[in-house]
Length: 359
Image (cartoon, rainbow, N blue to C red; front, side, top):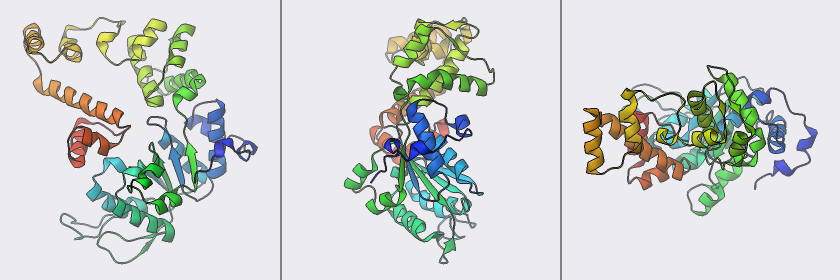
């Protein structure tokens, strides 16, 4: 089913478009192959399925494909895992006034908004089966019907999809339609994990520095760079960005050695040797980061600081638990909700309140 373009000699015939270097940073063979594939596939109108682990930059690949397509319409993105299942159909196809309770006005869906351009569905594996049926029909006929409407509406859109899961496994488990998988996977592109292209790390860090407010590049010793190149990077480029931003704060105007680099890979302040003293006002937050959950720890925390921001502490705990569940589920909101014994819609509501975005 999948076209293994990385191994195809066809790709080698295509030069890399220099515009892609600003979006997809990296000169390793796997990245060069990916860029050539985008040059080849971009100008077509066929659907593309973008695969790869969480944090590798699948939406960036979608932006590159849209840029190379030459389509004059916009690229309209949607994370299917971030929308409650009962609202996703209306989000995609729109609705007419009075179509359901609360539909007080006509709404143009994202597919219509992508007319003349590209619709990017991230985590398409989270799409409910009933919506999958309508999406397949929209792809086959290039028409849609708004919820509550009866007149077919012609649309000209190109579909790009992304997933970190193996959709063929979801097909076997009856969670994803096989006919839709065949339709969206005319081409399949795989975004490599960062651990498979560690030679690109120095270049990526330089690009991050250029885009940052300070514009200053991290000064790394060869030993520090070796630490980064041997790290497993489970969070991929997203994790590398966290490292970059953290190190910019902790080691401003300092050369980063191996021990500093190792410490900067971890987000907990208590594990680091900060370059600047921690202000007394920061003690409650730092203590919260490292204290246990025993009554003695809580009493000490209150006695040492006089007052405690209970709401803030509880929000931090809740955010950490949700982040941990999302990491363990590789960004799947449904699986994270199961881990936390919550309804999917309840978890989405908590994530929105806490400002947590799905991976």
